[in-house]
Image (tube, rainbow, N blue to C red; front, side, top):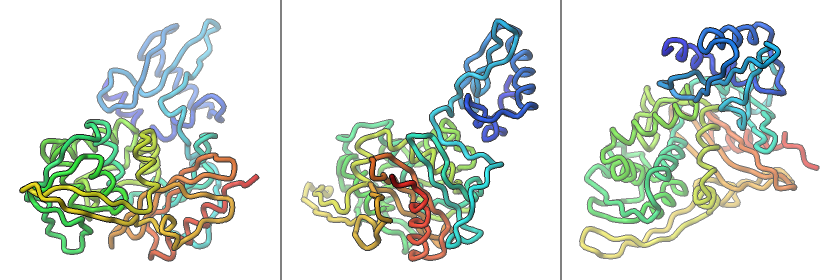
Length: 347
């Protein structure tokens, strides 16, 4: 059973498209029928989840009373699917190396996709997963304590200036993490939620697998460059879409700035004000007419280029996720993002 399940995992993107309403290829239907008969016997069904160690496969198959095969709703039934046979056009500003996507959340529809399954480096988009795992495993009022590991060796890493012994709530830490993209705060979250960094990274990778983010591997909680720390634009959609299920996440990513006070190891008050790294929220960049930027997360390293994933809405309030990764510079990043946003139909 395990070898069959792993085979289906490797074909997951193709199979995601096999939902009611999609165009099913004849040979795929035969494949489903054969697998159903092999694994369950005629006339039975099996429940399948997207995990790498599940007892069953990732899709439901049912043989109905007439003897014909039916495909039940899959784990991806509420997700936008990128059909590899669909021509999504090309945006001139993107260039060949950039990854980009635009997803209509209400319609579960992919409006645009380019290089969405190509391996790229996430930079600080990593912190979306850091926040997601923290929200899943701890309450916002949990007290976090900084260790000596908040002193990062990378001199270029953006930090909030934490010192060992500093304390703050998880809620405060998430604001600083997502608004200002502080790498030392990402380290503090990982150590406190996971008990140690290694455990937290395993939690991140386990969550990626659960979401079906098969092109993703995390090495750290902040996104600093590592050859084995990578993702894809489609995987970032899966992670960001899941994080949006938390209202506090949506609230934080929409804030242009944040001011808070926390304490050092002696109980003295330390005040901190941070501004969003999203230039739309700083009114430095502006979206096309009729589009409202709710908020998102930026990421920048030499290896990753300039990246941005964000939630936007049209004039009717319909939500979309827009993603640009591996832009050559910050100006091109926002040019690329606006080119994507102009593809949203405005009524």
